[in-house]
Image (cartoon, rainbow, N blue to C red; front, side, top):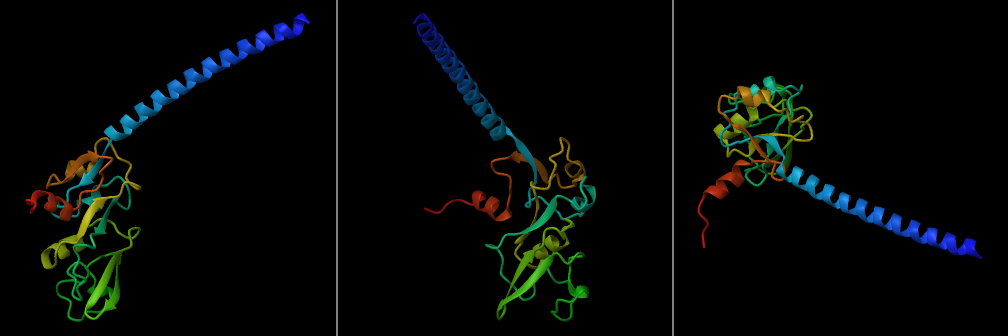
Length: 197
């Protein structure tokens, strides 16, 4: 009968020992999660400020990746859905057809879809986009600036010293918080303008 009593004491000891170990592990896990959350919150990524960008073409040629991690994005809320899109057509285009010789994009990354007369929707085929900025320059010159360049973080390797940032003549690249990785011109302009009551 002594053996069952001893084995129950050992079981209690094992139970208490296991419980203490589990509590310590849970505590360490909680602290690790908090540290990881703070690390992620404090992380920064490279991003291009479209308000400073001069569409020099260096995003396409200076990125360590081929094609570049900088892609054209379309801010649809700003777009006029124009028949004659300055970001889609070359300035000297005589006829508004989708023929390659009429398109501004050298890789045919911008797709044009008829919506209703006289409106067209323009979408970016990002794998084809090389980040040259020709469409962005055209949209800014002859449109409302709805085409903008942005670093795509699912592609970018987040170099410690970004080669595009190092060579950007407009100093448009900077580190931004990972929690707010995209800088869009419309949003930046809304923040600058005074709020109406």
